[in-house]
Length: 183
Image (cartoon, rainbow, N blue to C red; front, top):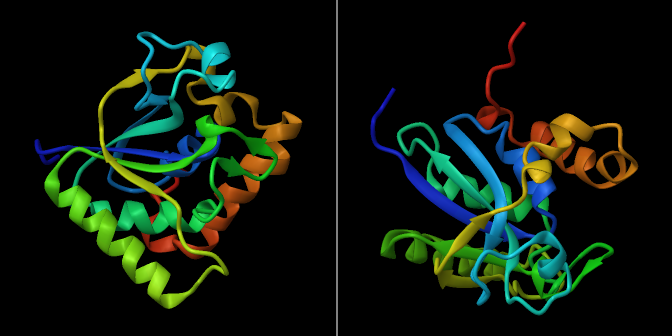
């Protein structure tokens, strides 16, 4: 395996959804659910849910750029959430559910801004994209029970109603990015 890895940090509503999808993307080494770009040290889930910490529920993705590009990750990201709703994804509302790309390099910033510009020009959605593009300031991993939540709680009603359809959508539309399944 290539020793060069990169990190991407993305927020698109519930981190359980993002983690479940990006876990299945080839070239992705690991996905951690957590909290990005807030202003309180060591935030907890309860504090983030109160909406006063400034954090977004996000995932930190470690990936091999020789297998999957940052642009490919963004294509998946924009396909599995609504980037046009400010501080909301479905029934989840509040700043913690905002859409965000927290770049780790100038190249990631440029790629994100270009993707948003191109998607807005194509008018895929009825409203413009409101995804914030900011430098990563901080990322705190969420509590252990949030990690691999969908894998461990797939039959839970929220997972069946919200997470599973996003995973299915990814599998249907991005076969070329799907990790090979074990027999």
